[in-house]
Image 1: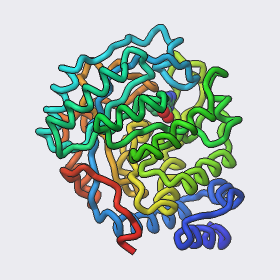
Image 2: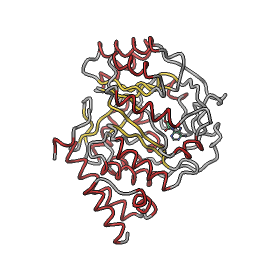
Image 3: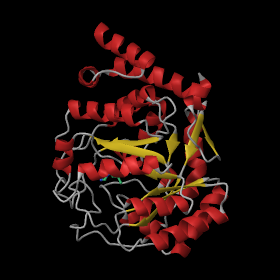
Amino acid sequence: MNDRLRSLIERLARERRLSAAEYVELIEGRDDEAAALLAAHAVRVRKAVYGNRVFIRGLLEISNYCKNDCYYCGLRRGNRNCARYRLTPDEIFACARRGYDLGFRTFVLQSGEDAALTDALLCDLVSRLKAEFPDCAVTLSLGERSDESYRALKDAGADRYLLRHETADPAHYAQLHPREMSFDNRMRCLRTLRALGYQVGCGFMVGSPGQTARQLAADLQFVERFQPEMCGIGPFLPQHDTPFGDRPAGSAALTCYLLSILRLICPGLLLPATTALGTAAPDGRERGILAGANVVMPNLSPPAAREKYTLYDGKIHTGAEDAAHKTELERRIRAIGYKIVTDRGDPRDVTETE
Ligand code: 5AD
């Protein structure tokens, strides 16, 4: 690491922002020493806000039907080899109860953009979950919906919404999605969710086909501006039935580097060590936490569903990924000096802690 890179990192740690050109320098100049310095700052900042607590979210993959045709995703509608399923409300409740008993206090309902998931059905599900588990947060991750739908779901009791922006660069968005999908609509959805009072999560893939350092810099600056409560990032991983099936995977090391940068930009960010990161490297999730992440999202879906939720090849769904193996996950997290807590894991208002 040269002096210039060191001074950029020190300034980012102090001022929580850099120019786009400086982010590009930081990304292009990455080496082990720079990664270690960024991670040391990120860990210090995360400790000041959240201590050594790691939050868990119980992921419920409620449907893998999707009307979209994103070039990277194995759930795309054009993928005839994807065996489609949709959980019934009873199945969802059975998983949630099991999760609650294991100590989960956030449930994330995630799905493809499935037209059968109507507002009536989802609002009923959300309000019944909130009634049965009043001490739990309900997070939705159901893609783009209408303003009215987002409002109805909020009124039904949903607390949080995850909608990755995928990339903050419109030209790159167009490389990753068919023309019928709109960058502007994705951004509009995020603004609506924010205005409705959700805790909002955005996010992007690292190493998606054709992605440049300048585009990653745009993602970082988007996070600076939007100030989300959550941000999910993970390496792009090819799925063999998609148009990007033969493209190289994104790097776990660059993902961790960006996790550290995001922690410095938004000290209070809820930042998951994602399944994609855990898939890209066997110790990926631990490395994510050591770089500044503070959330893990084990899968509570029934095993048969999990196997069909094939966003990318090789998705881990054994070992600690299975909620039944939560103790194993706890052991792994404890081994690196952190502790999984039974807690909703709401964002901390960082101004309080300064
Ligand atoms: N590799 C990594 N992440 C992917 N996602 C979808 N497909 C892939 C892939 N092939 C991510 C996208 C999407 C989320 C559900 O998963 O960012 O928003």
